[in-house]
Length: 83
Image 1 (cartoon, rainbow, N blue to C red):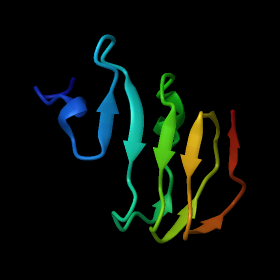
Image 2: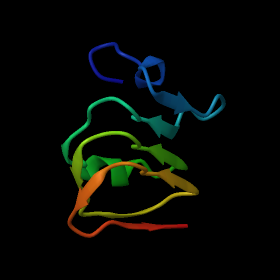
Image 3: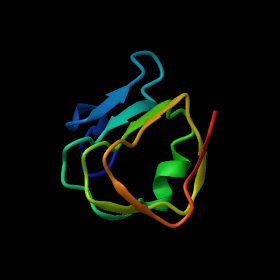
């Protein structure tokens, strides 16, 4: 928690109700463009990442997810998403 904000209350963020870990990021239709931050791969309990209907995205990290929804984007670089 930084500056008294709880990221679990942010739009598009879902946290496990017991552990409080971020388990889902839904950034679909949010006009996201550019490089996907390396910090996404630091979310060790992240299960789902939704990036559908955004702009041009650059993915440089390998991450392990149960689900990745990336429809209707323009990807640059190498995306490596593994289950």
